[in-house]
Image 1 (spheres, rainbow over the protein chains, first blue to last red):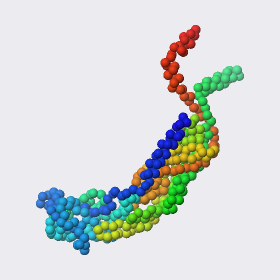
Image 2 (cartoon, each protein chain N blue to C red):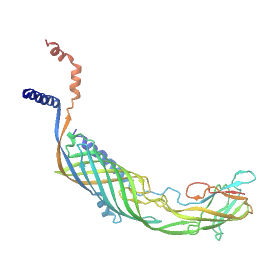
Image 3 (tube, rainbow over the protein chains, first blue to last red):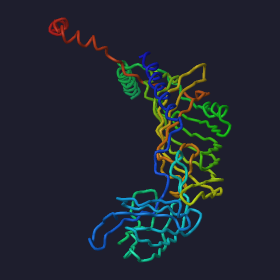
Image 4 (cartoon, one colour):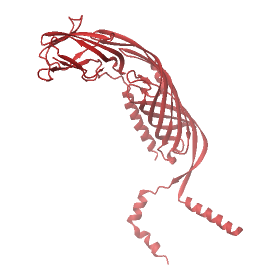
Length: 155
Length: 250
């Protein structure tokens, strides 16, 4: 029975070493930015379909394109302005421009100790031009880092 | 009548004597303990931003179970690339320790077992600055101080051994399960007193204790005699050695 105590000490010392290793700082592997995600629907085909070409930029940021004649974009990710309650975008679908305005509220969200903060949003309203866009409907008002559809854009 | 009662008492003593004749007993000291953790102050030497000071008192209910009350203080600061966090508060844990060593081994001097605790952290935390960058630029904000109470459960295996008379040292590993951080789900605390990393529902920690104890009572503990395995096998293999004795009786 005398050997029992040293054996337990050895086991727990090993566990301590393993635990000490887990105290080292860890890297961030999570998505750190929240986007409003819009899925494209072709109104004539009646199904989800990525446009042949998509360009997107924030109004007043024409030189800073989010998408530049990109193909296969599904869904489109709209980065909302964290320091404002509105964001305006120009979207060019298959060569035709439309303008979108989103109004929302923002709140900080701690992703993790390693990744820090991002801003989540709650979508209130949106207005848009209808040069190429038929309709936009809201699917989910909560805009987070999760891969969830927020609006459906029929074109 | 006196003679009858005298026989009765003698019979009772005889029965008691017979029942104890197959058992050994040891005198086991039940103790009251007080311990302080050395890990928190040790880490404070390395990192002056974070201080955890904690200790415990325990009371032996019997040779295998103790009631435990732990308490401590936390001061914590943390900075990441896009936020700062500050917290301070106290915590309490209450529960029991179970000694897995047999009384003959532990003798009230050694302990190797597990503890179960319920814990609560009473703390005040704030995010003095947080910044988030995206396509539109940088947005900064701050979350002011607020009070919260966290609740958690703890599983705490450990060992303890007497170094000098009434002075012990030992390790305790803390495996925690967070029940509630006491805050909303969006602005969770980075660190909770008594629990650890508040960003996750589980956490682990280590304490290294130096413990002072005083025996308050001595208990007679019955120890079952262990029959050596070899003797049993010997008896089974050679039954002829015992058989003549039993058959030889008239």
